[in-house]
Image 1: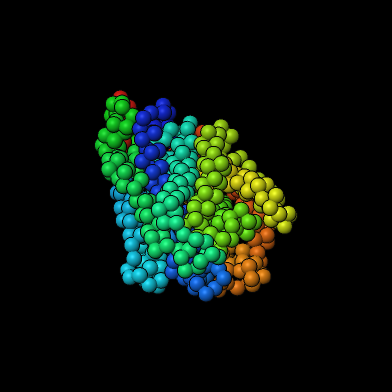
Image 2: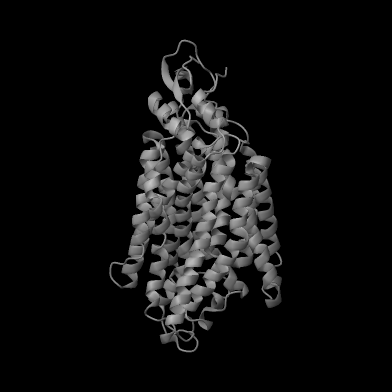
Length: 534
């Protein structure tokens, strides 16, 4: 039997959109801006790192990172993110969202700055330092996923909750875009100040010594947006849903929400419901939410295999089709510029618009529909790129390849990349919400690790002359894209395990108002303007 919704939570659900909603979006969103900047900036500088630290000027091509180093530099932050999602997701339910929220930001700021430092100047020392700090950077980033999503969902009203959570996540698009813009500015400035010949013209002079500053500046800049929001993040009150439903602190819930909603709130007596206190590993959770958790984890896992493969290895795909010149035809700094220009163009034309189309439509057509649309068109465009792949490598057809490749990003972001983040923050009980979101997000990062490590090797051509040094033969870009198309098709099917949360309160979705028992012990929780037993 369902019981009446708590009045303080009902006040949140029906509240008009106010300044505090947008403040919360900016505060939480800037964390995601930093997350995306830090995770994707590394793809802009890996080729530069190879040139600086692993070039043998007697070889016909500039140096590249050895396979084990490239996979570590690219993937170590993802491993840290996975662990951070699990740990901070669990901690957010145990200690509260606010208490943990500041710690993740401190980790992100400190490790962003430290990523640009080195212990020694040997390749081994530089790469070991970079990997160490990027792991802990990822650990902090991981905590931001469940905490930001949960905080925004618990602050939002039910009419526009999806748009608010999606807007937080959409800041990821601006982070990706900004990483490209920063790389463009820095590389242009250095290219203008320190002119150098191409590697083909003069290998020993094609990488100027000052290029070592470029990758450090790009990576360290990620600390700036996070630092700007630290004060405001510390000032945010704990969410009323955690305070009322988990911490059971009626006075603090009333005090916090009075400030947030700008209304007077008095105490309300409610029944504590011992029959609805099941844990994560209980049969009751399995019965109520087991299928939902399976749906959120599998769809996020499958999505991130394709999404991170495409994002982290754009430079390799663009090089393969000839949109970026061969490495030996550029100097080191100009190569950074060309890679950044391509990534910025993709972000500007498809990645960022996709996020914000989701924000505009998610509370109109729903999460389920958007996720199906996204997976469907990602599958279609992957196969359209892969099956006639040789056609797209002809110079006059490259624009068509880039356009269709950009559309896969658009439908990833107007699709499962946004919805897989939103839904886990809505459908689980308050006492397990952060934990379950962390589990779902960690499954996604497991997919990202599969994509990052797998595509690195799989995309290598069978022709040894076209393969990066040190890599075994792979299946090539064409068949890698076919595999990613199949992965997207599986994501479409697993979407049917995920419920539609549009227009429902969090307590209605999670079942926290069910099975009330008469005569249970009571506690005080805030209600507007009167004290009434529920």
